[in-house]
Image (cartoon, rainbow, N blue to C red):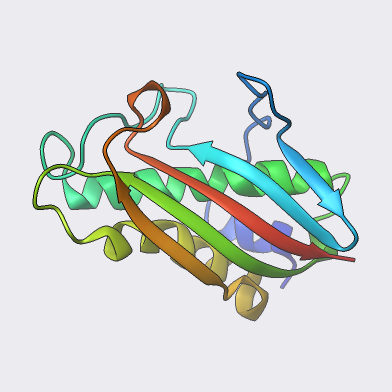
Length: 152
């Protein structure tokens, strides 16, 4: 099954890739690796903001990480000129969760992103990753994830 078919089966329509809001670019390709800047847990409705374990539930946070995955895939699609079949492997994800005091289920939150990458890219979506709790994320978003992707 193609990546486009998997996205359709999951009822996912990729958004236009987010434009940078500061002094950086959305992605950089060096050799066969694409480094995608951190994508936030936002969508057309505004997205999921807040502190996980305080005003965001773990389930909402996992959904936020899934939004990050969708935004990452949109950036990857831009990097490969629209041809997601050029993705060889999702190499690594770096996940950041705006976590409240005592909230330690950071890996479970980032699974929202990791699981979608495997659903969309199959075995090529299996990756190494970091999952880190932080005090605050840009614009108050609950989750941010960046990626390294091997392409052909």
